[in-house]
Image (cartoon, rainbow, N blue to C red; front, side, top):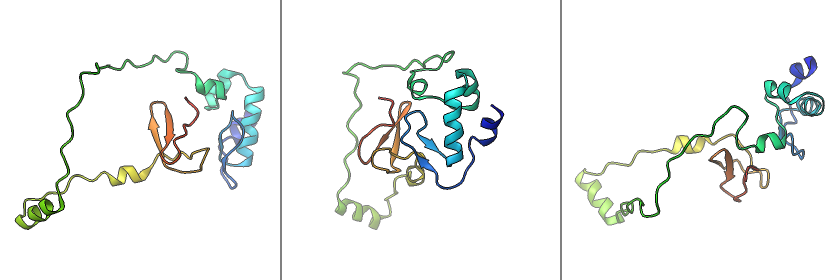
Length: 146
């Protein structure tokens, strides 16, 4: 256990995705080897303290002792109103000329920041959160939760 604590999360190249379903990402070869040793030889509780989970443990809907949050559901008749239509180019030019145009708030920085996840199917970094999982915005595959 002492060696696993010392060498897990060691960072150097090569780093990235693995073909091991229990250990999807590793920050180095040493990190991968000691994570594999932890999966093989440590108990579930010891691995949980280190943040190392097997595929089956990651697939659980909730971990023991953690309650699922209750979400409010709505009926199919409770739908949102249609969004406002986008003004035509001539309307925008008229608003700009009159000085009444104000640009909508930009959320580009948060969208460009990304999640840090990499798609295991296509390698894209365009992963969006979908509940407890991530879905690739390019190919549509999920991070394995569904």
